[in-house]
Image (cartoon, rainbow, N blue to C red; front, side, top):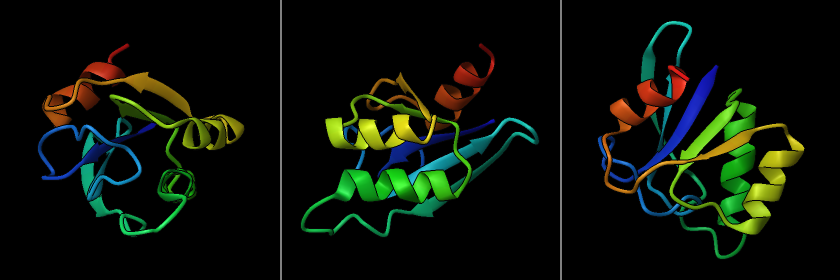
Length: 102
């Protein structure tokens, strides 16, 4: 399973989803953690839905974030991506490992 976590610094969970600078993608199959830039950060409209599409294209099954807007949440749900709460400021690595251990 792949988990996506919004992050601005690559180390801690961002307080925002669609306008986070990056997404950390954790793959529990091999315990890899890759940080990828969020290309839609400067979108005038639809940053959240753009981020959702971006993550779906990368095979993410779970988003771990403090909050996801309603349009982005709908887009993720339509793609069968689960959303779980994560604390802003928490360690990205610890958040991913804790979620994947469930």
